[in-house]
Length: 149
Image (cartoon, rainbow, N blue to C red; front, side, top):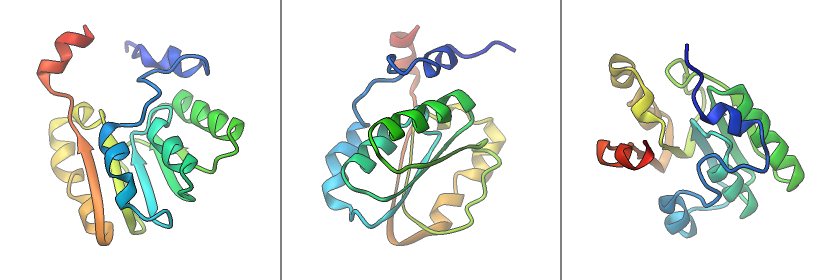
């Protein structure tokens, strides 16, 4: 099995794997969110969105990613900035929502789902959102792939 390029960059705290700025959607809308909200970052990578919200004062931020290297890096970065993010390693196709969240976000991960797993898993966040909660998902489109190759 070929190891994805990002695994090496997750091992280096001086390298920002997918940029240091939060996703534009989170940045543009975070002022509408309440800092007491429970937040879940699905497929968080090295945690740029989770760390951003935690840095703004959100204290119920949780995040998971399939990559052990990504979660280790997120935990190191959070500790170095004295931020609280509850992060763990998890396969998103196997994740079962066990509690409600006010915000569930996933950026640049859903295109990695296997076709049938997405049908089953995509509806799960909606069923566990708090009343008036939000989901924010982003798909990598084919037009964007040309710029990454």
